Length: 153
Image 1 (cartoon, rainbow, N blue to C red):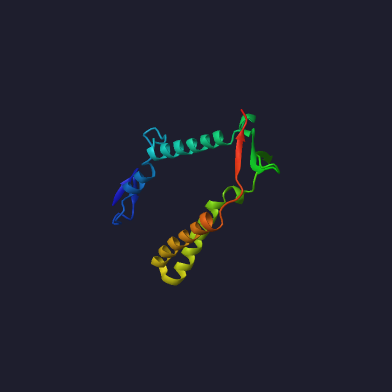
Image 2 (cartoon, rainbow, N blue to C red; image 1 turned 90 degrees about the horizontal axis):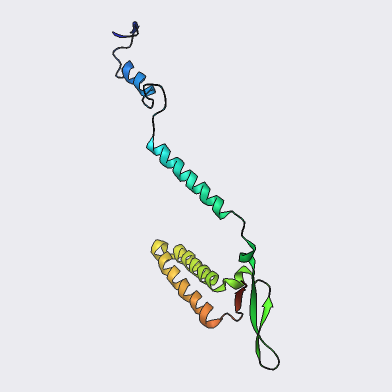
């Protein structure tokens, strides 16, 4: 029979002794009862603070200098002279047309190849779709509108 603080413990034959249970409750505390320093908690808190501080830096307002830009487009007048005319900002598709077409062609080829031939077919289909979309984007239907972004300082 085990004794703790002059009281008898009836389940002395259990595989977990009272001492192990009692010690596990206070394992993370010092002798004074204060929590012990944990390196994992310190690293996690440091990472959270670093993430939040970087979010604050990114979300600060931009000064007016960075917003002073406009787009121009090349135009030929009726006398054959080339001039650059100020235009409004082109749409997202017009600005990134080549990248979007390549990505969609690759994704479409991978989808069709995956449905037909599984994992290996997906890889072959992605390559075929990339080649076909490159041919379409750069040879068959070239980009005709070119814009330049002018920054004023």
